[in-house]
Amino acid sequence: MNRRAFFVVPWLLGCLACASITGQGGDWQTAEVSAASQRVLWQVTAVAIEKERFPIGTGLDPSTQIATSGWRLDLDPFKSKGFREQAQVRTERLETGRFKLHVRVVRETNEELTAPMDPSRAKWKKAPNDPTRAQILIQRIKSLLGTELEVK
Image 1 (cartoon, rainbow, N blue to C red):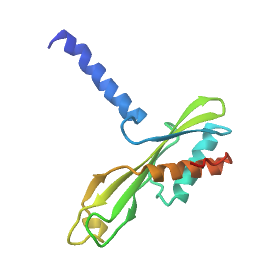
Image 2: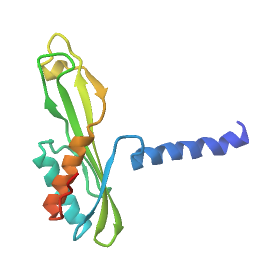
Image 3: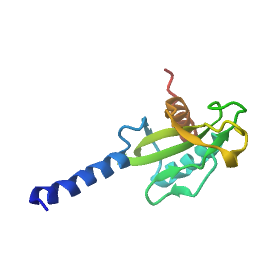
Image 4: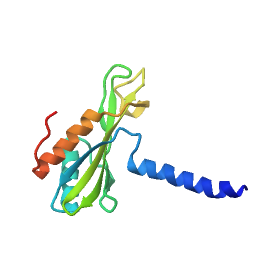
């Protein structure tokens, strides 16, 4: 094996892993918030996900501060009109009492033609993420924390 490749390949894989962890290139919406502690922010995030009607799945990991909801279904009798969405939230400590939220809502459409209302037969196809739903989730978290709402 080429000596340069021996060093470049692990470095490249590390960069790709960092990009996926930091969420670059994935329509992440960000906001800074104030919270009494990371634990309070985590609890508020879980409540906000639930209030936005995303099912609480097993993807809520307080040790890494990454929350991935279950899929929320919205089926429709027409091909490509039904969809499912999943909320993903990461928190990052900036300083004492200040945190940065990274939020995105992943969306997939149902391409099943013969039985689009049957979730067991659904054929999911990746669709563009929903930045508006992500901003709504951020505002929900902010309102539960008691910070001022942003008006755009």
